[in-house]
Length: 454
Image (tube, rainbow, N blue to C red; front, side, top):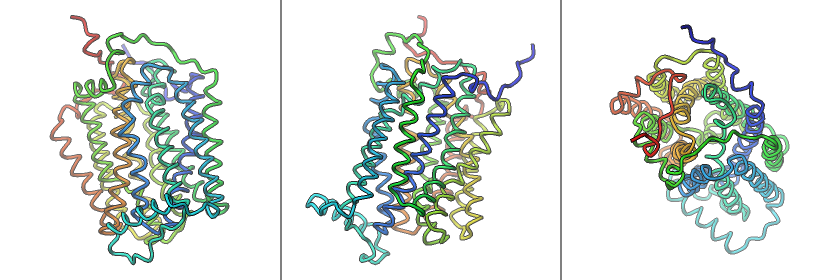
């Protein structure tokens, strides 16, 4: 019996999913533009690599503290409602960012703000011993407020994150789930191409506050588009619902391929991430300014879109786990090339290929998580996945910023790329079954232990 023809647009044929995808794209677009604006604003205010690393810390602390409870929340309540309320809260916080940016010179130098700036300066001096202390500027009273709002936005994103990802399987048939994950990745990467470039351009032309106001509109668009969307209701076992926030950890631990894929992403991104270094490269190495920074931020996403379009129109690979290992190794090699480049176009090429390799890894990992997990545990397993992904990205930003402060950006990026290759080899040796994962369309949901027949 022949298999049905591959349909690259299977998920897009469902209206609820199309509305989710559109709203999620717009929300991510605003977030990416905001990320470039906030990073450039903080760097210009402080002239400090450590200050950039601390942005990563503001994002990773809420992730570690709240993501597992957020997963339990997604498994017990209406995921659509959680997501829309989170988007609305994020929009209001972006409005606060715009207000602080517009009126920062009118904010009084309150003792608490001066103390916070003094603490930030002392942290920077610990790491940035190779720079003139007088070049570090931690004197704007609005700076601690920027960090506070970034922290609050991170809390909101974490609380809504598991609901966002685990809502997708309720909008489409299971057979179209892998295709939906690929389109999710494509839309996300497209937003990370347009968003950073747009953010850098708008900052250069009109300033930071306009970017923050754009994010207000982008976040509210998700709320509007999800009005009227009715996710499917799937039965959830009483036993699974009664388990706590750590149930996702247990499920992951009992399934070594999921554990290996998550571990690979965690350590590779911690070592290989260079996003936090891009403002330094744009300013001191490539000399391309905020507009160039936007293109540097966009280049990996452009590569990811190219890979996503290619894989969407191809049948599932016979051994996606093996290809994922090779793609992560390629990711590390691309970042090693970027670390040594002093030519703008070569840096863009290296980042483009890093995005190509990273996209395939992302799609395989997310597909494994969503396809193998029963819906009753999907929010909590998704939360664990997001803890791995989010912590790796934000710890990577902290690692890169602090390493650059100690040894310079080239050493920080180069060591990260080589470390990624080494981690890939280690995971391939420790988890040989990952190489033999079947095609994604053949993966079946694994019942939880409490749901298996006696």
